[in-house]
Every structure is written in C-alpha cells, then in structure tokens.
Image (cartoon, rainbow, N blue to C red; front, side, top):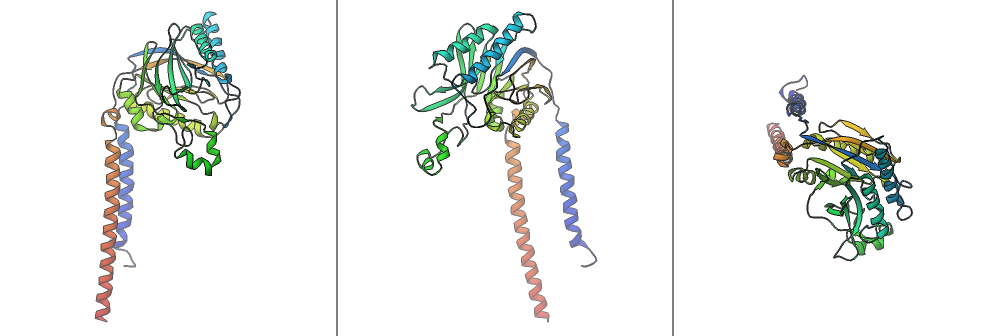
Length: 348
C-alpha cells in the first residue's frame, strides 16, 4: 500500500532486528573475561638488527644482516657488563636474522656463537637452513642457540607463503611469469608446533604470517607455550601498512589466548604485547634497536583454546542456511506475485 502497512514495515523491522543482533554479538564479547595474571616472568631482550634497504633486495652482501644482529647483541652484552642493563635470561632474534645457513657456513656459526657467549644467554635465532634430505629445498627455522652447547632445538615454519617462499607449478609458471625466478628455492614446511624451551621459558615460536592462521597459534598454545614469539622479516614490506597490520594481529592473538606476544622483526616493528593486548614497548621501522622486558608467562587456557574453530563453523553454517532461506523465500514471493497477477487477468 502506498500509505504504508505490513509490507513496508517488514524491511524496517528486519533492519532493526539485524542492528540489535549486531550490537548483542558485539556486547557478548565484553562478557568473556580477559585474564592476564602472570604465573611468573622471564627477562628477555629482543634484538632488531635492521637491514641495508627495504624491498626485495633487503639482504645486501652476505653476512650483513647477521652481523647487524651480532653487533647489537654485543652492545647489549657490553651494557650488561658495565652495569647499565640487566642481563637477559634469553634473547630473541627475528626471522632471517642469519642470512647464511649456520650449519653450512662456519663464519655464520662462529658469529652467532660469539653473540650467545658474550650475552651469556640462549638466543632464539631465525635462519634459513638447507633441507638435510631434499636437495634444493630450504627450511625457515627458529633455532635455540645455547651459549655453552650451541644450536639445539628448532622449529620449522609450517605454512610457507605461496609465491613468496615457494612457487606452485614452478616449471610451468616460471616460464610465463619471469619474476617468479626471484624465488630461487622452495621452502619445505615443518610438521610440528614451535614449542621449545628457550632458557628458563617454554615459548611457542610462530614465524611471520603464521600469526594469521588460527589453528597454528591455537595448537602452539595447547601444546604448552607459556608465551608466544612471532619471528618476522618485514623488510620486503617496509614503509607500508603491513608491519602495523601484523602487530595488530599479535595483539589479537594475545587477547585470544591469554599469552604475552613478542614480535621480533629484522627491520621493525618489534614489540612486546601483554596478555591483555596492550603494547608495552615497540621499535620504529628501519632502526637498530634492542628491547628489554620482563615477559609474563601463563599456563591458563582460554575459551578460544578449548572451543577452537567450532564458532567459525557454526557461523558459516548459519550464513549458508540464511542465504538458502532468503533464496527460497524470494522464490515463493515471486511465485505468489505471478499467481496474483494471473488471477487479476482472469478477473478482467
């Protein structure tokens, strides 16, 4: 009817109902408690060594990035010996902090070992390592480097990035898209979570954009990680919004899992995020810097860890069923309209 009525009221009621539902869902999140009390703490240092330049050619000459991280760590060790800084119980380097495989290149091994011995604490080193069995493949690893015993436990990135860390259908696509040749070797994925003892702390290593995958972070926490470390190399995306975006992801994961999150980046942004999502310290991009902090360690499991992906599947099913119901209702409405039109014609 032109003057309004049940038919014109229905869209308004539906819109109002949707708005109420959206507000209710948003408010429901406030009912979930965010617990952040620490069981204990560990003194950490996060080293951001910096790179030569942003972009695809960030590596520069061999050993450049590794030496940057070694030098920053040696400066920290000097501050500790001089009493200007407290000795950390563990040190965290970012992804690709060693641009040479320390198992193959003695100079890389010696440089890392020197840094660990100088600072007197184990270092979680990000390095590219040749696959031991598969020729031509490389592994993106976080390696626990003890000052006395050298390299020990390691974590291999489980989810390499397609076209960035490996090229699907390499033989075919590289002939058509020549830029793919700039990815010379494919990364081999790991098969287990990155839960490792780094000094006195049981940490969960997550490499780069694995922080975006729910199941990887959740499995890491459920396997016993008391805090999370995001080793990342953002140099390729320097001076874009990507480092900030990744830091926001770290804040989300902190709240979701009730864990402190350390983001260690080669060129920034490195940061320490508390279990409630607040940023305690952070660095600027393309600077050499060292962050020291008392990192809270927690054991409590959150509802997100217990429930897992169930809400996602439920919401997805609700969405599919809603679309199906809307489609069916629309068809019935059109059929009803056609029938009424036919009745009017017959009456005329």
